[in-house]
Length: 413
Image 1 (tube, one colour):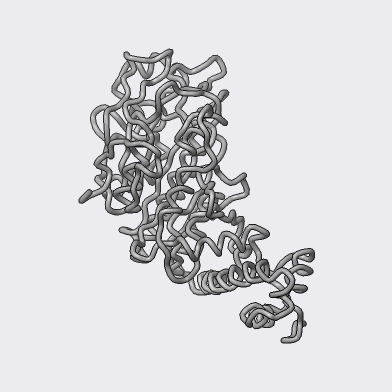
Image 2 (image 1 turned 180 degrees about the vertical axis):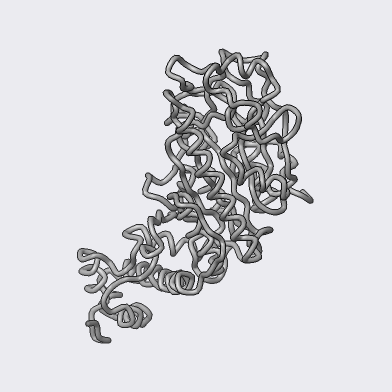
């Protein structure tokens, strides 16, 4: 039990050893402190990034079903023409993408074709690093593109973190910033205050600094105090989200769906968080790709479709954009293990309201390959530039450290 006479500095130090009463962990005070300084107040659009880790086979995601070269290259993996969900006379979705196809028919999907970069690197780590940092490994990089974007957001009330990573994986480098720390949240409960005496904790931390604290480590106390007050505010609203969120939308049973449902809860709680980052692993399909890839695509498609139906039901359709990418596509020809090896260009997907729905750009040609891989026609940083400028309202050149032409992804842009 704490009292007004408790030495707050002693409490903050000693409670750290026993598990500070904030659920996110030791990084929380910093991230909330910076969030209060950098969240924007004049823009309420939200970006949800879904990373398909392992290198998604774009050729069996958006399928050139009318091209004989596709079937010639994939004796066992080619999806039968009768099963393809046709987009037009040449291209169609994998049959697992029923949810994405329905969203496309509803005007909520833009497919950017042939996305990649010059001199593609087929290493998972290095290629993902390029997508996250927007530079090659021989160039200095201390932060990621989203982290740099967060630094440009202006302050807002509420103290919510500007971005959240949901999942148990290592936090993506894309979120790294020199001034803002982004928390990783595994479960909603981990985002809330815990402890046997939270009301007393609030009184303690909300009180004025003590002379003792000012004399011995007052800066540290003030830092933790101001940060924790922001944490309390955000935690209270997250708690309200958990208690007040209701939906008639049935989410599929998958980890990604659970995470997107959590995002829906936080958005419905009017959190000012502008970027959510999620990952779906398992796309490194070197052997027996067919069934595995179908399951993964269905998980992604059904989860995103449920999430956007939920957003529509709660009136957030025009506020939310889900951007999906993978570090590279697969090679055009299947290998001897009924799988595909690391390749180059692939499609990106944007889902939500406010989009120019449909196919964007030119489909890669199967008769014009580069070392057996699809050639890219769109630099991934052009997609980022479009999202930054036309969706998040941020200067893309500063974030991307160079100029990249934007694409007609968003209506009215």
